Amino acid sequence: MAYLVWCNPSRLSTPCPSSLVQTEAPTITPVSHSHTRHDRIFHTGIALAFLVTAIAGFAPTYFLKEFYHTPPLTPLLHVHGLVFTSWLLLLLTQSALVAVHRVDLHKRLGIAGAVLAAAMIPVGIMTAISAARCATSSPQAPCRSAISASSPTRAAACFIPPSTPCAKLPTTSARR
Image 1 (cartoon, rainbow, N blue to C red):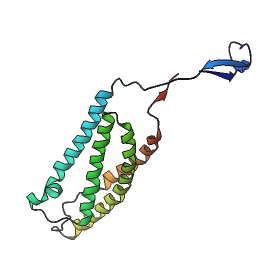
Image 2 (image 1 turned 90 degrees about the horizontal axis):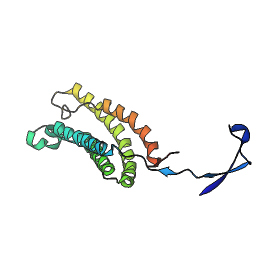
Image 3 (image 1 turned 135 degrees about the vertical axis):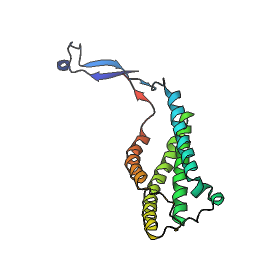
Image 4 (image 1 turned 180 degrees about the horizontal axis):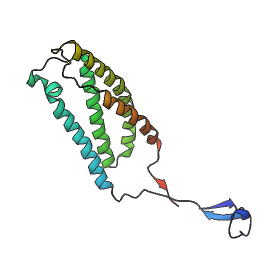
Protein backbone atom coordinates (compact mmCIF):
# COMPACT_ATOMS: atom_id res chain seq x y z
CA MET A 1 0.00 0.00 0.00
CA ALA A 2 1.37 3.40 -0.91
CA TYR A 3 1.01 6.65 0.98
CA LEU A 4 1.45 10.24 -0.12
CA VAL A 5 3.85 12.08 2.17
CA TRP A 6 4.66 15.79 2.26
CA CYS A 7 8.21 16.38 1.06
CA ASN A 8 10.16 19.30 2.49
CA PRO A 9 12.97 19.98 -0.05
CA SER A 10 14.98 22.08 2.40
CA ARG A 11 15.46 19.07 4.72
CA LEU A 12 16.61 16.61 2.06
CA SER A 13 20.13 16.20 0.68
CA THR A 14 18.69 15.47 -2.77
CA PRO A 15 15.84 17.62 -4.02
CA CYS A 16 12.46 16.00 -4.54
CA PRO A 17 10.63 16.58 -7.81
CA SER A 18 7.40 17.76 -6.22
CA SER A 19 6.04 18.56 -2.82
CA LEU A 20 4.29 15.15 -2.57
CA VAL A 21 6.26 11.91 -2.62
CA GLN A 22 4.87 8.39 -2.80
CA THR A 23 6.28 5.96 -0.25
CA GLU A 24 5.60 2.44 1.01
CA ALA A 25 3.95 1.83 4.38
CA PRO A 26 6.19 0.62 7.21
CA THR A 27 5.84 -3.08 7.93
CA ILE A 28 5.55 -4.76 11.29
CA THR A 29 7.64 -7.87 11.69
CA PRO A 30 7.59 -10.23 14.65
CA VAL A 31 10.43 -10.12 17.15
CA SER A 32 13.19 -12.61 16.46
CA HIS A 33 12.90 -15.73 18.60
CA SER A 34 16.43 -17.08 18.34
CA HIS A 35 16.98 -17.91 22.01
CA THR A 36 13.43 -18.25 23.33
CA ARG A 37 13.55 -22.01 23.93
CA HIS A 38 16.39 -21.55 26.41
CA ASP A 39 14.59 -18.60 28.04
CA ARG A 40 11.32 -20.54 28.35
CA ILE A 41 13.05 -23.46 30.02
CA PHE A 42 15.10 -21.17 32.26
CA HIS A 43 12.24 -19.00 33.54
CA THR A 44 9.86 -21.90 34.09
CA GLY A 45 12.65 -23.84 35.82
CA ILE A 46 13.45 -20.92 38.12
CA ALA A 47 9.77 -20.52 39.02
CA LEU A 48 9.56 -24.23 39.80
CA ALA A 49 12.75 -24.00 41.90
CA PHE A 50 11.24 -21.11 43.90
CA LEU A 51 8.10 -23.14 44.61
CA VAL A 52 10.01 -26.30 45.54
CA THR A 53 12.33 -24.30 47.81
CA ALA A 54 9.39 -22.64 49.60
CA ILE A 55 7.58 -25.95 50.07
CA ALA A 56 10.73 -27.67 51.34
CA GLY A 57 11.62 -24.76 53.63
CA PHE A 58 8.16 -24.34 55.13
CA ALA A 59 7.16 -28.03 55.17
CA PRO A 60 7.92 -28.55 58.88
CA THR A 61 6.12 -25.43 60.06
CA TYR A 62 3.32 -25.04 57.50
CA PHE A 63 2.75 -27.58 54.73
CA LEU A 64 3.45 -30.75 56.76
CA LYS A 65 3.07 -29.37 60.26
CA GLU A 66 0.82 -32.27 61.40
CA PHE A 67 3.75 -34.67 60.93
CA TYR A 68 6.17 -32.45 62.88
CA HIS A 69 3.82 -31.64 65.80
CA THR A 70 4.60 -27.93 65.78
CA PRO A 71 2.43 -25.43 67.66
CA PRO A 72 -0.74 -24.18 65.96
CA LEU A 73 -0.47 -21.16 63.69
CA THR A 74 -2.38 -17.92 63.98
CA PRO A 75 -5.00 -17.07 61.33
CA LEU A 76 -2.67 -14.32 60.05
CA LEU A 77 0.08 -16.87 59.38
CA HIS A 78 -2.40 -19.05 57.48
CA VAL A 79 -3.42 -16.07 55.34
CA HIS A 80 0.25 -15.24 54.81
CA GLY A 81 1.00 -18.82 53.74
CA LEU A 82 -1.99 -18.91 51.41
CA VAL A 83 -1.25 -15.56 49.75
CA PHE A 84 2.49 -16.10 49.29
CA THR A 85 2.08 -19.72 48.10
CA SER A 86 -0.54 -18.50 45.63
CA TRP A 87 2.00 -15.98 44.38
CA LEU A 88 4.54 -18.73 43.71
CA LEU A 89 1.93 -20.89 41.97
CA LEU A 90 0.92 -17.92 39.83
CA LEU A 91 4.59 -17.28 38.96
CA LEU A 92 4.97 -20.88 37.80
CA THR A 93 1.70 -20.70 35.83
CA GLN A 94 2.67 -17.42 34.17
CA SER A 95 6.09 -18.75 33.17
CA ALA A 96 4.56 -21.94 31.79
CA LEU A 97 1.96 -19.99 29.79
CA VAL A 98 4.66 -17.92 28.11
CA ALA A 99 6.67 -21.08 27.47
CA VAL A 100 3.76 -22.60 25.52
CA HIS A 101 3.08 -19.30 23.68
CA ARG A 102 -0.20 -18.54 25.47
CA VAL A 103 0.61 -14.88 26.02
CA ASP A 104 -3.11 -14.01 25.81
CA LEU A 105 -3.87 -16.03 28.97
CA HIS A 106 -0.64 -14.78 30.55
CA LYS A 107 -1.85 -11.19 30.15
CA ARG A 108 -5.30 -11.99 31.58
CA LEU A 109 -3.73 -13.65 34.61
CA GLY A 110 -1.48 -10.62 35.00
CA ILE A 111 -4.47 -8.72 36.36
CA ALA A 112 -4.93 -11.38 39.04
CA GLY A 113 -1.21 -11.10 39.74
CA ALA A 114 -1.53 -7.38 40.34
CA VAL A 115 -4.39 -7.96 42.79
CA LEU A 116 -2.43 -10.70 44.54
CA ALA A 117 0.65 -8.47 44.72
CA ALA A 118 -1.43 -5.71 46.26
CA ALA A 119 -2.55 -8.17 48.94
CA MET A 120 0.98 -9.48 49.57
CA ILE A 121 2.37 -6.15 50.72
CA PRO A 122 0.05 -5.49 53.69
CA VAL A 123 -0.11 -9.19 54.62
CA GLY A 124 3.69 -9.40 54.59
CA ILE A 125 4.03 -6.27 56.72
CA MET A 126 1.38 -7.42 59.21
CA THR A 127 3.06 -10.84 59.45
CA ALA A 128 6.46 -9.24 60.08
CA ILE A 129 5.03 -7.01 62.83
CA SER A 130 3.20 -9.96 64.40
CA ALA A 131 6.35 -12.11 64.31
CA ALA A 132 8.38 -9.34 65.94
CA ARG A 133 5.80 -8.99 68.72
CA CYS A 134 5.63 -12.74 69.32
CA ALA A 135 9.40 -13.13 69.40
CA THR A 136 9.64 -10.60 72.23
CA SER A 137 6.69 -11.91 74.25
CA SER A 138 7.22 -15.63 74.73
CA PRO A 139 9.55 -18.30 73.31
CA GLN A 140 6.63 -20.79 73.23
CA ALA A 141 4.33 -18.50 71.20
CA PRO A 142 2.69 -20.13 68.15
CA CYS A 143 4.29 -17.64 65.79
CA ARG A 144 7.80 -18.16 67.16
CA SER A 145 8.87 -19.96 63.98
CA ALA A 146 7.64 -17.20 61.67
CA ILE A 147 10.29 -15.47 59.62
CA SER A 148 10.13 -11.73 59.10
CA ALA A 149 8.79 -10.95 55.64
CA SER A 150 9.73 -7.30 55.57
CA SER A 151 12.62 -7.63 53.07
CA PRO A 152 10.71 -9.69 50.45
CA THR A 153 7.72 -7.39 50.89
CA ARG A 154 9.86 -4.32 50.21
CA ALA A 155 11.33 -6.05 47.16
CA ALA A 156 7.86 -6.87 45.85
CA ALA A 157 6.76 -3.27 46.39
CA CYS A 158 9.71 -2.09 44.26
CA PHE A 159 9.38 -4.58 41.39
CA ILE A 160 5.63 -4.96 40.91
CA PRO A 161 4.58 -1.37 39.99
CA PRO A 162 7.11 -1.02 37.13
CA SER A 163 5.84 -4.25 35.53
CA THR A 164 2.17 -3.29 35.32
CA PRO A 165 2.49 -0.74 32.45
CA CYS A 166 4.27 -3.41 30.41
CA ALA A 167 1.08 -5.48 30.27
CA LYS A 168 -0.28 -3.12 27.61
CA LEU A 169 2.72 -3.42 25.27
CA PRO A 170 2.20 -5.27 21.95
CA THR A 171 3.99 -8.54 21.36
CA THR A 172 5.45 -7.37 18.03
CA SER A 173 7.87 -4.60 17.20
CA ALA A 174 8.12 -2.25 14.23
CA ARG A 175 11.33 -2.53 12.23
CA ARG A 176 12.35 -0.29 9.38
